[in-house]
Length: 579
Image 1 (cartoon, rainbow, N blue to C red):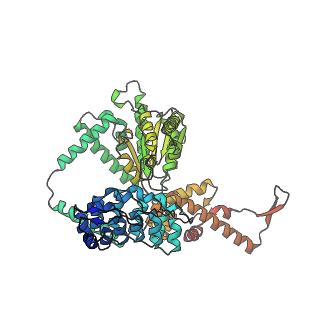
Image 2 (tube, rainbow, N blue to C red):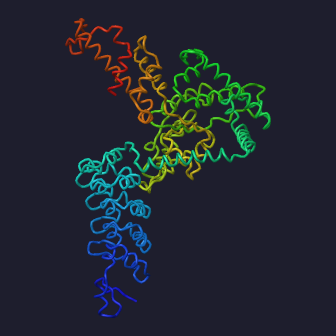
Image 3 (tube, one colour):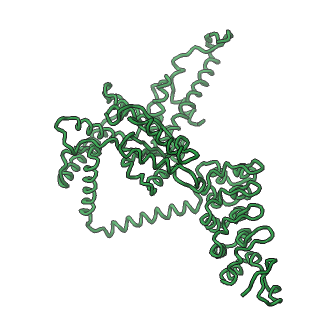
C-alpha cells in the first residue's frame, strides 16, 4: 500500500513510484481523473492533504469550476473540507464565488458548512464580496445572500461592502437590487416555471371535472365535523359566519344553520348591490358605540372585524344569568396577524388593545410592543429576565411581539438566545395573561408557526391582512387628508381617485407598498396644491400676510383661501404622475 513520505510525496517502497505519482491537487484540475482517484479507497486520504498554499484538493477543484460529482466525492472523503480555510483564509466556497459557480457546487458547500457564508478571509472578504465583485450570476449571489443576508452590509478591510463592489464593477441591476434588499424581478426560467405550473393546474382541474365521482357527501361531512370542533373549542367564532352557537346541537342542526346563514348572506349581498352610489361605513355606525367607531376607522381587515363582533356577542351572552357553559368565552385567545408591508399590521395591533378592552376581553387598554432587540440579551439568564419583564409589563393588557421569527435560530446566530426568549413567552402565556399578538410577514410567519417549538397551538387565531385595493388605498388617502384639514373638491370621489391610481400604478408596486401609497399620495398632493397656490398668487399679485418670527424678524405668508385646502382632480392627476 502506498505511504506518504516526510515531504508529502507517496511511496510504496519502489523508488520509481514517486516519479509516476500525480498529485490529487493536479488531478482536481482535470475533474474526471480526480473523480477516479478520489473514489479509490487507497487514495481517499489525499483529500485531506494541503499544498504549499494551504489548499485542499477541494479548494483546487472549486477554483477550476469542477462539477458537482467531483465536489461530492471529495466531501465524502473529507466532510470537514468545506470548513477548512487555506493560508489566506479562503474556504472552497470563496473560490466557488470567485469563479461564479457552478451553482450546485456552491449549494453543496453551503449545505456541508452553512457558516461558510459568514466566514471572512484574511482580507475581510466574504464569499459574497467575491460573487459581487466578479459579476457572478444572480443565482450564485442569491444563494450566498439567502444563507447570510447580513453579509450585504459587511465591509472588508478596504471598507467596501458587497453592494459597493457590485455597483463599482457593473453588476446586473438584479444583483444590485438583491443586495439592496429590494424584490428581484423573476428570471425567464422562473416565469417559464410559473407558467408551466399554472398550465398543469388547469389541466389537473379539467381532468378532475372529467373524471369526478360523487364524493361531495364525504367532503361535506368533513367540513361539518371540523366546524363542530371549532364550536366546541371557540364557540364565539361561529358568530362571524352568522351562526348562533346555542342553535347548534349536532351535525344536522349545524347544516341547517349554515344553509340559513348562506341564504341570508346572499340576500344581503343582493340588497347591497341594488343600492346605487357609495355608502360611507362611518355614517352607519352608532356614534355611542365606541367599538364600532374604532372598527370603522380600520380600512379592510373584514376578517378581524367579524372576529371581534363574534367575540363581543359571546362575551355579552356569557354575562347573562341564563348563559350556558358552552357559550362561556374562553378568552383571551392569542392572535397572529400577518400581512405584506403596509397592510396595517401595526395600526391594527395597536388598536386591538382598546377594542378588546371595550368588549371586556382584556382588563386594560394598555399595550406594549417588543421586538428581538427588546427580548434577547448576551446571556441566557438576562434573556429570560427580559422576556419575563415584557410579560409582566403587559399583564392585564396586550403584548405585541413584532417579527417573532427573528427569535428562531439561524446559521448567522448559532449561539443566540432568541429561542429562550420565545420559549419563556410561550410558557408565560399558558394561563392567557397577557393577550399576546404576533405580527409579521406571511411567508416568515408560516415558517415560524410551523416550527417545532410548539408555538402554533398557542396562537389559535390567525388573521391574514390582504393587500389593499385601489379603492381602499383611496379611502385611506381621503382619511389622512381630512385629518390634516384638507377637503375634496366637488368633482372628486373615492371611486375617481381609485380609478386614477389604477391607471398610473401597477398592482405589483401597490402590493409592495399598500397603505404607504396613500401616505405618498398625501405628500405629493400637498406639494401639488402648494405649487398651484404659489403660481396663482404670483399671477394675481395677491397680498401676503405679515407676521413676526421669534427673533423679531418679519416673515411673509400668503393669505389662505378655500382653494388652498381643497384637492381637485387635476391635483390628484399631477401628483400621481410625479410619485
